[in-house]
Image (cartoon, rainbow, N blue to C red; front, side, top):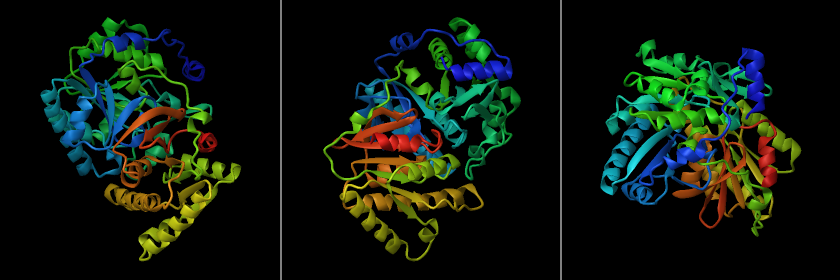
Length: 459
């Protein structure tokens, strides 16, 4: 049990109902059919931050999806990176994937569940990409389960309010910098109000429901599944959770539900769906190699947490630093500027020096979502050109930020399929591709000030 959250709820909310003891993971696993596959559509590469020994695909052509269905695996990720796209493009991709999966599942005779993995701090194209996907699958009446809890990152939902842990306190999510995101900002910490806000007032309060922590911890599985079965067609339902066993109880109950349910979830729910147990964090020895080249850290994320982590890394280590002036990316001499950075970085890495590349922290942004995403894309494209232009191969690469890590994986490193080995830190996944090349996806919103430095010390 999480002693912090248990004590915090008791002290600040007079909530003393303890989480259930004993894991349901083995029972959940036994109920997952071998002819069934969970397909996790990940809106950025960080969704693998709670799983291990699972494949990630970066394309969804017919050949790839057929291979996925015939793999014999019970779960796989498809990286859509839709959070970096405009809403119309995200909707187009969701429809395309839903249509293809439905057709290929019918050909292979396999059943499937599609899960929409979104941000634990509520950024992304909800509800647009969820509703169009359900429409494409012929499931418009499915109950949309909203599950943003992500325990390794300190994200908890209690009394329908979503919280982010900062130090030894919980901050309502709408009071954090994440809610001020230039593309996906919001004003509601109460998730029932957040859903209505995201639907832009086009739905009634009666269409948004919740499963309380009291219900999860006191109702029997039969009673909880009965409660879910009574929810109205097409409604949204907030799932409160502050402990792993809360989500286990919820998932087990859904296995007895006769209704169609659809999960819009952060990362903590994903391994529970197949009953996968947590693995130990990867150790320094797991990154040992005969490679003499230096390693590379690429920092694109602009959230304050990332900036603090970058400063701590630079203060505590002797890593070589390479700043990319964002203003230079919008001028006429961008290529000349980046070529000089590429040559300098290649020389350092070849000499065995570790390098951190980071964009200047004076964030540029426009007046609307489309403009802001375009600016973010320009910056990410510059980082991709640097990594793809290197004349040497770094020993290990850490990419900081969702858009950054996705673009580097797919455009610079040309990853088509990778295996999730586990995590280097809580919430920080390690992918392996090619000839034992390791790629660390470091979310912009995870860890304290020391986290990036601690990850770097392991590689």
